[in-house]
Length: 140
Image (cartoon, rainbow, N blue to C red; front, side, top):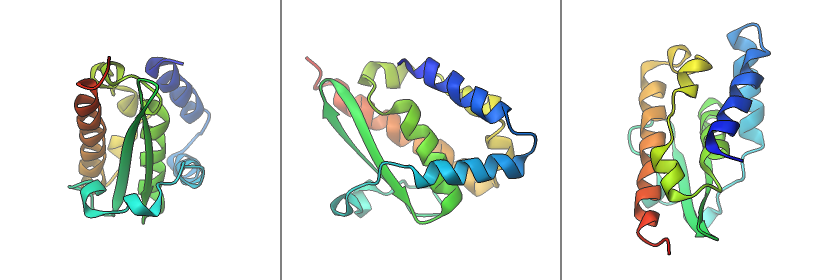
């Protein structure tokens, strides 16, 4: 499935909810289903800088795709990173680098986050793309 297909799925899912309380609840549920990062990767090296909460993201290459795992100590933030992991994990570095993140605006996420969480969201995307850039050099 392409990044765009996954983003469209997420847009469709969020459009089913009438208000932001329901969307927050859905994000919390997504956070609970997040593929958890192994404790050995919960290090300062994997912490997203610029997040109010602690968010760890780990990336590794598997069959020319970048696979992400993550965790957070805050439930909303965990939901946010779960959405990003769903979009970007198991994609090629090139696809991640070129991916548009307009779907975040389409679901209204950024405008319903506090300024510090919105900054954290930007930092998460930036870190995911940095991993992709680092791994792109390793692709055959």
